[in-house]
Image 1 (cartoon, helix red, strand yellow):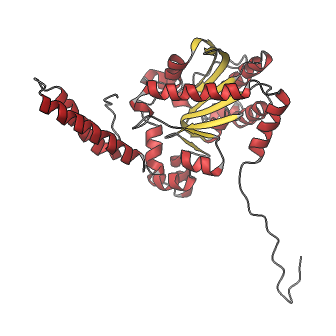
Image 2 (cartoon, one colour; image 1 turned 30 degrees about the vertical axis):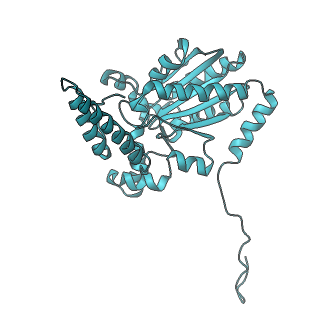
Image 3 (cartoon, one colour; image 1 turned 90 degrees about the vertical axis):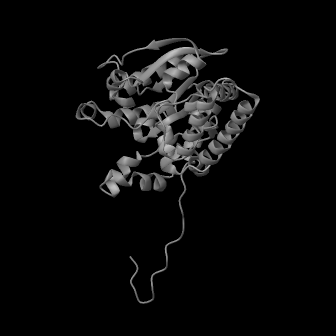
Length: 332
């Protein structure tokens, strides 16, 4: 369990216990009484984590999804895959560093990996615009996906973005159009596609690589039509209402599963994925391998038909007959 420098406000009881345990572990000599005390505190720490993380509200979940120590695309590439070979450029404009693509091996499966990358250092974050992809990123992803489909290689997409880049240049180069084209392309690609929201899943930027045969979300990630700040800015004209917006958007994993927007929720380690990268990677690998085994042997017609039906069935609506016009009123 990492002793993270970055602490979330609601984690104050956890922080106090971690600091106390760290202080006692530095104490010498370690008597039997001291070791018992440390053991009891660790048990209390686990219970406190379980209680706090078991009742997070929507805005607190968003904060966990954005935790700077949370494993990103590059962490999963190192922990899950072998022989990753990155593929660059869209053969049209440039190479978007916010959306990475490449071939890799996951145990016995050869796959194409596509994922958002936010960057870890300030230089990296500026290079990839904090995970906000430009049109060339989605064009690159589409081209590599078509290549994967040609050789019947499954595609694994890692979603982690607050949204597609909203700048003038991106709009001039067809941001909305290319996201729509990417969704259409993914809906009919003749190869298995697995999509996992590993952190933030914001707006069209997430949907651009979010159409697949399996769509999963990590327990403390979020998936939403818009970021809470964006929603608050539109509805309340102030980002101060981001917490209210998060609650209204129903963007947590439990909401998403209940609404049928995702197929599976992948449980995170106690205290969130940022506390144990290796355990999170292990759980994610188990899910990916299980999904690949289920999908790779399906006839292609069945795979595509199931994918189509899966997205057609999303959403709920109320269908009722119109009320009859009141007596004496003319019907139109």
